Length: 288
Image 1 (cartoon, rainbow, N blue to C red):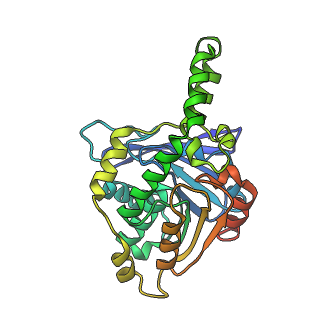
Image 2: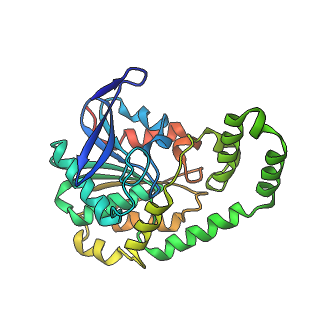
């Protein structure tokens, strides 16, 4: 492992089923595995805020296959089953008996999928702005997000940015502002989008994951796998103005015998309500 002095983090490449996954460890104490969103994104855009949770515990991040610093050849499968298998292999490599999973967005759904495949291996589930457990609610998210991104002010600001000359005079600032506009629809307060660490999504991975899930509906399987009172200890955190339907978060929470901590945010509570986000997770995740 190579140390990163500025953050006290250590990173490593781990060979998993023919692919190399980039991993990052920060903190000390009981381990918590953090699952980023996407699919096809990478862990960086959860930083620096998620690192606030490394006090009294170890956070284990990794870039999921087919995204970020874990690229794969085009012929390598990147469906949901491969993502679940990667997590199980990492659990074995890290020698963790039962996992505390902290999943954001798609990572929340990945945490649920892992729990369904390996119910005896999950001790706690913390789901932040989780992707829905049904394709129907996912389609509703896409509709709501598209409607937000179609607002006239976004087109107007994009046109103003293109005409500003920043692309030539200050390319880095131009890229930053263009990125903020591309994710503005996720936020309760779109001006806060500039505070989100920029990220990229590998489109092939994203498409492959959703295609592998098809017209999915995990509700019956959740009820069968975790009859009333038997689900792992769970927490759901969701923004009331998230285009990811809060109704779907409430449904997921009910299936896991818990409720929803509802924050006055959009899809990135770690950006828009950092203190409340940290407080909610800090009180739930294992710590020394």
